[in-house]
Image (cartoon, rainbow, N blue to C red; front, side, top):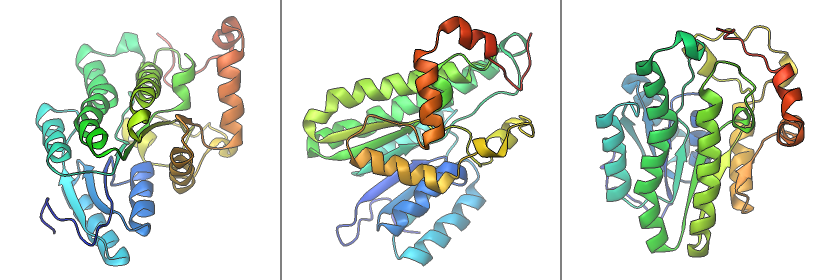
Length: 265
């Protein structure tokens, strides 16, 4: 594997978290095909090594695996250090989690772990990357959020609250750095075929097939919307309509129809 300092032939460099599967892997494949050198962050070192070798071999780019658990202090600090030490043209904050239990059946430890990954890691890595981007007057950040963040539609789940933070944080930061040529995007997909729900132990078998998005399509639309200068991207017309409804429907109507597979109580 290449040295952490390696940059070849003037190629752009990207760092992607949650990169071993799902939307993170889709971004990695897309960016490698565009000629980006990559740093891939995920917890599973063996899987990450295989994926890095595969991408590097297919596309002739440098791919560095960086195993780290962003829900831990040491894992987050290691990725922050990389972002501060080596110029990064694009940061994709994709790593995230949900809990297969309602708030009343949860624990402070579990809720803090969700916040460390969904909120604190996004904030810390964005803050580590942005000063260098602003100084160079170029750079991009994509923070993967969710349509769930537009409304309290999952009773008992704190996941939507964490994603509401990501969306609002990203939009606010985007407004503050765009004068320096730096772009920040909140990417807000709906249900996407990944390992996300399986890892959280959430049974999604009752979810209609038409609601599922393809991870590669989500990554393509997110990158396209970033380059168009958008601050918030909602892939697919179906979810654009849903977000419009969440933003403008009467609150009491949303509360009446809200459902979640985690149950109540």
